[in-house]
Image (cartoon, rainbow, N blue to C red):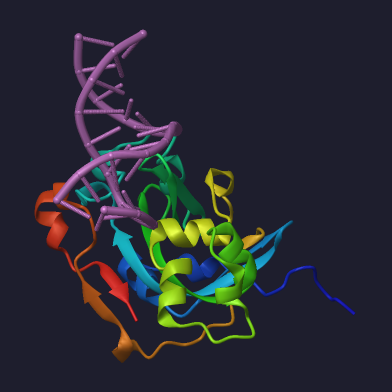
Length: 208
DNA sequence: GGGACGATCGAT
DNA sequence: TCGATCGTCCCC
């Protein structure tokens, strides 16, 4: 008998109440889950980038820029900031920072866990090569959910999910962590923010 | 109303 | 390395 309609249990809202660089590392190893009419997909977060608000020249809210797009970043942490980029892709972020501190964490890669055939279908990949009966190669994983645009597509995340509560909606962070050893976390500069001047070299990309 | 550009991806 | 493709934002 089902005790709840959720596939997994979501983290408590308090989970997101951490400094952004700390939350970035805490997200590694957590499961991102999306329950939709098409089915459930999920994956373990393996790569993120921190965007640290009004003083960060790489951040959409740099200088306090507050628009309809960035509005959710100004609210409480633990909500989805989804934006459209390059005319064809969506990027998914976890809002971080307390109210009035518009920070966010871009999720750049996942290790697929649930709903792999659905992910493959959304990505326009041949279902045969990602049959769950067969072991996923690193190449499959990369094509499915390696990169922010790819993982958003595989997870069925679009602007529709903008502003959703990641501890209380059908898009959420699972509480069952695949606990990453902190020693396995690597850091480096963020990708594709050459315009960000001195901030482009900050080591605010974290991956396993 | 117009134009420049982008936290990407995939093909070459 | 380059083209696709269009919402967002800033400027006029």
